[in-house]
Length: 286
Image (cartoon, rainbow, N blue to C red; front, side):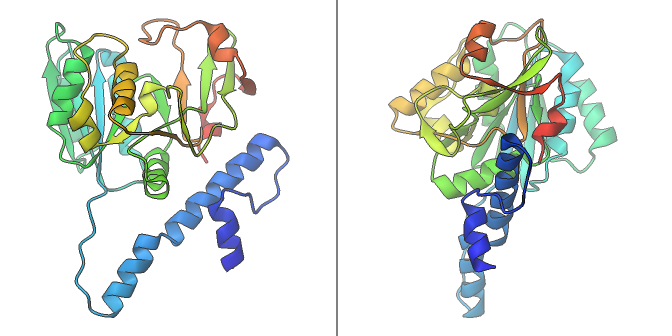
């Protein structure tokens, strides 16, 4: 069993599968179990409790920051966040140019126990200004930028917080990621092999999770677009590395209309492989 734990912790699958993508998913599932069951901080806490030493564990709470100008998508994003298996979380929703009462009523009816703050922002404010204002309301040492048009599996935050513990990084994201292209009706795996390492590229903005003190140093620019790119560039300039987790539990949906990330499909497809036909992000949740 100790040997199996070490193998699983390195992401090596311990169960047979029939395809490369399936083997990779089994490895991630094994690593998640190993990190949950053999967390060094938990072992140290048990040791200190056993010898009667008083100790204080730093907070690991994470705040989801959801700023949306699309009232037709914001409620689904709220539901996805509240389905997270990671319990120590809060949610800050910024309704950009639409009435926040609909979100407040939805939370009260469907998620009455949620730790949530709902704000209303004038449509004349930039996305960057709204993000900064929403983060200012958070009371968590970690922040997860949530986009209303991306897929978040139930273990998304759990995996992110385990990656923080294992890597020592201050900014993480999914440089290797699944993306659905409606024009081709295919889901691609972009940048395979770029998992669990520090990267020089730009992870998708909706997959960014970072510590609060990085935001205090950098902040989001007062701009309507490309705020994620400027934030990551600023974090690197301040000396913070960017760590890529694995592609699982998240997916980028390239909607035909209204997506803030405008990029040629050729760029998305370059170096990518077809993960599966159609849109079925349940396959990304393991």
